[in-house]
Structure formats: structure tokens, C-alpha cells
Image (cartoon, rainbow, N blue to C red):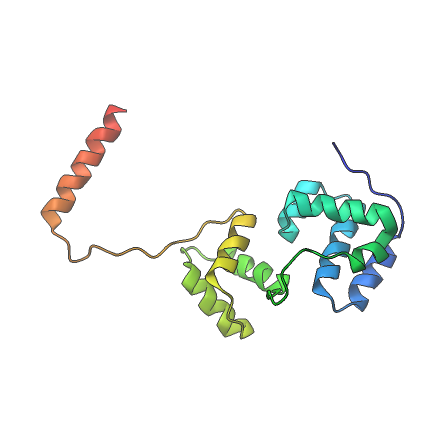
Length: 166
């Protein structure tokens, strides 16, 4: 079922409201409505703003009920005390990752954020945002650099034989 947006506000009104508020959650809700008014597809909006389909639907529903005033007082259901990170940090991180030709571990991403923004973002938060943006990451695994080379060659041969059989 496709949600239709009621015409409570103009694009200009929404842009002014986004600029005038410091509430990041409210800005996100307004950006969702603005992008929909500007003709972006729901899937592009969800991917760009890193929101779930349920969240997207809730924002549209609340906006249709009472316009931007209804979005301002709309609670997200977060527990008190949960940190809300600036979306711009992740947008810039993704731009940096897209420019690189190497794999980035979550630890490397945490270090980059700390260096550039002075923020200590938990690895679970980074992993969550990577997943929402359809990125993958390099996980830490022990390296067998001191392993027995003969056993490694033998293992590779077994894997290759199995692969060729299928």
C-alpha cells in the first residue's frame, strides 16, 4: 500500500523549519517529508536517511495527521539516555569509504570518527548504520602468519577440489 502525502506545507516551509530547529530528530522527520515532496522514491529516502520502512511509514502517517507540528512532538520510542549521533558523521564516513580502495574495519572507522569529529561512537552503532546503508565491513580475525605453510597448502587444495566438484 503506497502512502500518499497530504499537502500541509510547501517545500520552502519545510526547508525553513529544518534550518530553524536544532532538534536533529525533528530535522530527520522533516527531511523525510521534504524529500518525498521533491519527488524522491521511498526507497531512496530510506537509504539516504538511514531509516527503516516502519520509521518512514510512521513519519508519513504522523505528518498526514497534523503536519510538521505533529512531527515535532512525535516521540521515537528511544530510551532516555541513548546517544543520538549526527547523521552527517555517517554521511561523511561513507563518502570517505567510497573514495578509498581498501577495506575499512569498524575499529578504523571509529578511529577516523574520533580523529575528525572527536566522538567515540560504539562499534555496534557503526555496524548498525553500515548495515542500514548496505555497506559491509572487515571484521577482526586472527591471522595465521606464523602457521605451517604445508598445512595451509594442503587446506587450499582440499577447498579447491571441493569447489571444482560442485
